[in-house]
Length: 359
Image (cartoon, rainbow, N blue to C red; front, side, top):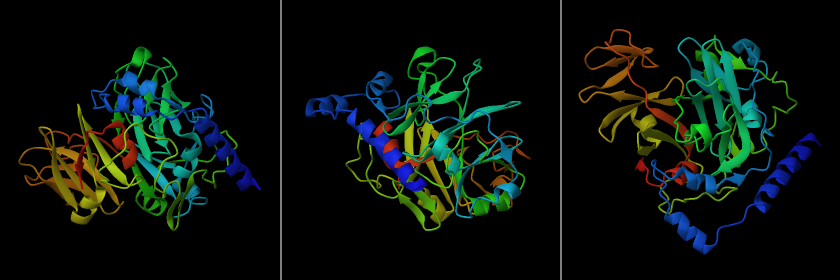
């Protein structure tokens, strides 16, 4: 009965959103094609195409007073196949279960010097860590609105809108302000608990009544993704759609940003070869497959530099060493980390139709 009520609630929200949103006419579509939606895009155009996702502002409540528990305690309720989001700070490792985040989408963390938000949009499969703008004592909330099916956050200090994928303020005091971010990785719980025994795991003690055993969009179960996460097609029509069929709509690519450049990397290339070097503008990057965690990590490298794994360290062809977060061990300086994250292909293309593609 609870599951039936849950499904009916989600259906009503989606029908409400669709009913309140008119489809563009052919003339409107032509106008969209003329928009400059490169990274130097007219962000006012994005504001003009905000859609209602159904819930009101903060109707999907962020977690502002998160409780963290030990890996041992979390293992009592998480299954090996459960998906968790890994964020590695300089001195802590955080794990955020997807089955909790799907109900809240934002976790605001204020622990000493740790002030950031772990954001997750189920409709676009994007998990990104964002830091607060300099000088603002703030937090992020859900606006209840979407752009290209993506979570439209708002900053509580300025009421500015920020699209989660784009990460740039759209209005008010944060207009054109790009948020700083850090990589977040999807992990199976079986791997997370094995390699991060001292991690801080977000607990189900959120202060809200939610069924964290149910996912309103589908499931990331023992047999892989199902429901919305597996089926092609989107609930809300994106501004731009890929006519070249580079990937299927829900295929998870690694989106990379550098200044005004955007690139979509197929992670299977890196998993197959263990490493992949590529250029983004004038900069050199290297993607490495972390086979222990089954994730792909990216680093900026020098022209004549090539890095590889030795144990839990990165080692260059010149003998310099770093930890996996790029912090120097014997090297003269840290490895720089690009701005990158996993995201469903349709959503990345909808924001950045001029993206370069490596597949």
